[in-house]
Image 1 (tube, rainbow, N blue to C red):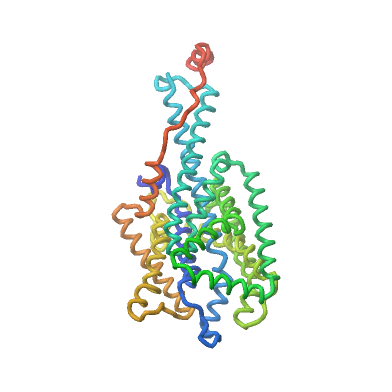
Image 2 (cartoon, one colour):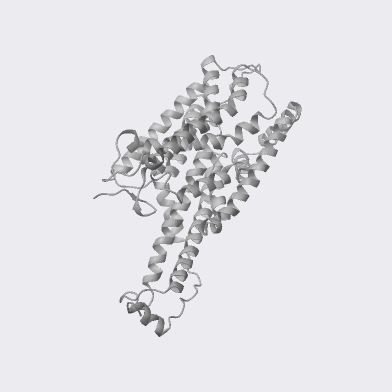
Length: 437
């Protein structure tokens, strides 16, 4: 029987997380393309958006904006906890097998089992933290070209919370997530109630300072500020905690067992998220006035919309099949999802080529297109990455950036001082070896 095997460890590769990541990266492309596209404002200050652009902005505000990155964070947390669980399970068995007499048939004592699990937990914590540091470095390099990078922020989350995740300190994680949501709510409300004159003055000052610096310095500064803002103010940590908790259930890995829950979460989450963003979306389309709390409501309920997306995508993907094979769009999305870092970084390369490199070389100016056309470009970029991932899948290759990260994490591992296993008394050994002793 052929089973889908994870690049990060042995075991069944459940399709739902991969399929969800694959489609999530389409949402990320659609959410990121406005950063590369020039603003829809002419020299006279008037809007250059067409009616099609306006209605696309309306739809995007309801189901994409502030949904893609919380979904990304949930899947990141899910992946971290899956890695931790597998590392602890395999590490515990490896440590138990290293004990004297176990290979000869002696059953390990309860103290030895606790020792083995503790050593495996420490290894898992160190793995996650080491991986997090490398992700911060990857994010820094990416941030030179795209200051909206999210890899560094996820790496910082892994570094900070590796211990709590490895030991499943969910109560502490819930409290931190709740505090961050309160801070985020206060920050977003403060922004909403700030006067337009204050916001305009602040933006003008920032633009003047940015224009005085080289573009790569501006990007690095923006990335550094965003790195901490995303962790402390945005909803990355709460979303990652939700994803980590889901990894300790079978809701995502066995969605067929939870159809009712997932259907209600999917429909209800997307509907509630869209309702929260409705007024701000209508204000943009009809050129109306935003309410001061619009931004806060839209941002905070983005995580609800992300839960809706995850539920529906998990339902669509289904559970593992006997032969491990996927067909149609599921197969394509899974190939993309298994190489999410490569796809995410490839989007920057492709967007930079389309919007900056080629047009600047040809005309001396960056490309401008309408918002609807930009969304079509984002779809095209995602399809290009689908082709790339399918080609890698057929060749049996992981994504190049996944391989680079895995190699860096493995080669940077250092030996640690390890507590010796508990001593086994002869009487204990005899009682474990002799039935009924």
